[in-house]
Length: 84
Image (cartoon, rainbow, N blue to C red; front, side, top):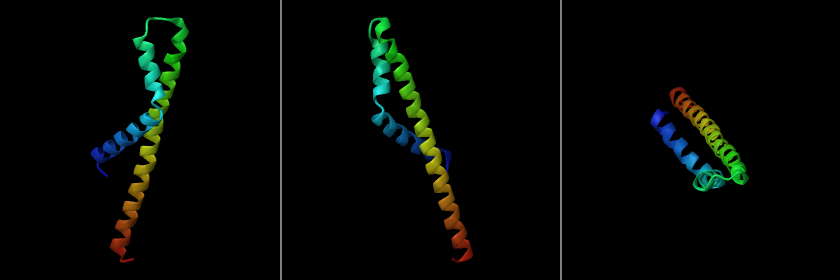
């Protein structure tokens, strides 16, 4: 599997995780768009944690899907070569 196809797959999965976890980037946007106020400091940390979790989840899913696709591809190649 080429590096570009893996990157394309990652971007697709990352987009879906950000759709599901959109509250993280929204918290970050509100925190930086609002006037400095200590009462919304929690939005920074919550937004940062949720967004980082989204990225890590997307990386884990991409790794699992790519590993699975590679093993299926190798199995198919081996079966074609051995006539099974």
